Each structure stands twice: as structure tokens, then as C-alpha cells.
Length: 92
Image (tube, rainbow, N blue to C red):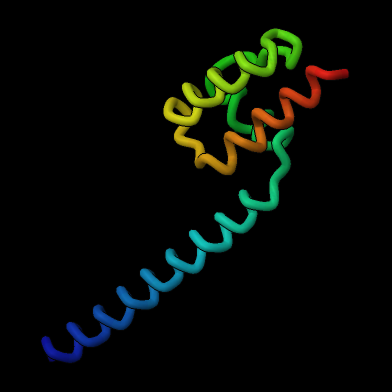
């Protein structure tokens, strides 16, 4: 009886882990498809009011991006999209 319970528990654990891994990869794919504007709106507003793209110049946005990548736990690809969006919006 104990052996059967252990086998069933092991199978359930493997199914659960498989579902979590699958969920993570689909979530990463969704994030990878987001634009800089979407990432900016979703991530920056979590902690503070989002500044206007005209608040900083291109070089300053690069520095802000480096700082916020660490603070907001964003990937280099995500922060590059956000900084590119802010710099392009600053040109208008």
C-alpha cells in the first residue's frame, strides 16, 4: 500500500512540475512578444508614476534603464525595448 501511494505521489509530482515548466516557457514567449511601450506601462507603474519620455535625454534613459533593470528585475532584452521606446518617443 505504501509503495502504491509513493508511486502515485511521484507521478502527481512529475505532472505538476511538467505543468510549471510548460507555464514558464509560454509566459516567457508572451513577454518576448511585448513591445517596449507595453513593458514600460506594465513594469514601471508597479512602483511609481511613469515619467514622460521627455523627462530625460537618450543618454539619461540608458542610465535609467541600467538602474531599473536591476531594480525591476527585467531582462536585458526587456530593458532594451523599454529604453528604445522611450528614446524614440522622446524624438517626437
